[in-house]
Image (cartoon, rainbow, N blue to C red; front, side):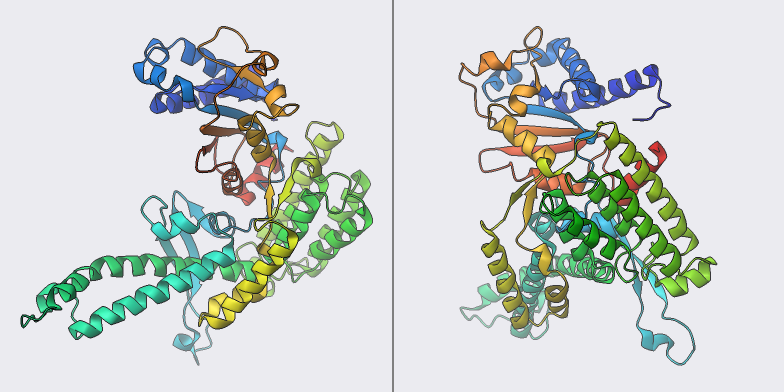
Length: 509
């Protein structure tokens, strides 16, 4: 997409991606079937990778590889241009929201926490802000592993329930031992309960470690909740989802009106939130032409320049942040004005790609799947969640009930998920027919039409790889293809959060 890139630059980049994928294949020790759309970067990478594997005698002839040949993984290589909505759309799941609203890199999360205001009461100073750094790794953290894909309100609820259970168990053990925390403190007069008591006390360190991990997540959930509530993220999520799934296809005037209302409301979201909404609107099919997109973008720009944004990019209140940043246009900080200019460039770039039909519009590219079945089951899930919130003594959960209702009960298959699922299920007249079929064990391209008459082994392992940047939202959405008989692995040239992806688009402009 970079107009300044030379052919040599492209060859080098595609070669590096193919080499990286070859390392993955070598680690797996199993030769995959390679699928990709025809033309462009995916085909270049796929053919280079196929050649690398075919020319590697150890891999192609390995006994392990031959043993697994009846159940080979399918590697689907895709291009980011097939779906530019997913990297900018607001998310609803725990891990994706952490990556979106907090500083998150290499399993480390960083965020600011305001200290108790009473500590500085009467001194005329604002409460001090402390920077927290916490590590979360799903490989060693049972709670994170189990709930990272869950809707954010469910993660809050599960954290409160588990913490309550662990605290009760800890209190029970301590009461039996008179507050002791080590087996040495257990006095055993020979009674039958001594062994049980010693076992309970020995389990205390494990219990305390679990409690510590849960408390880490409580802090992170609180930080995410603060951002989500301050920026009204659920409103952006709901409107973007409706746009992307074609809900406004027959009512484009309502779509434009609602986008303008939200994008021009100074109390809703920060600059990037509004830019992301306008981009989703620009990429959604049937809701607006170029002049409509210009009108929406101009309304957002004028509102931000005259009224500012209640929430600045760094999470500070707009008015105070403007004073510090020397802002002169409304309450926008200098940083926010830079983000607005960058966002407008990104919108112009996508408009240009759309006018040249270089990217697909997205309403036909997303399918709605309600996690509970029908729309009414989504409503039932919300009602159930609200009932549980009133029964649990968790302030955070009660706050989430009020703010996050729209994040429950809705799940939508993104473009990459649909493509991978069609290939795994071998559905006719879909990507399974359209995508190239490359097999390093076979010379030349394989004719998929001929394969339709032959029995193909079911896909037990799929690897989805995105050229041009991936995100946690896409990774989690792809797990909808996974089941007890099939695993789905996700990879990309890099993992980017929405703000970083906006910067990439602005640079390409």
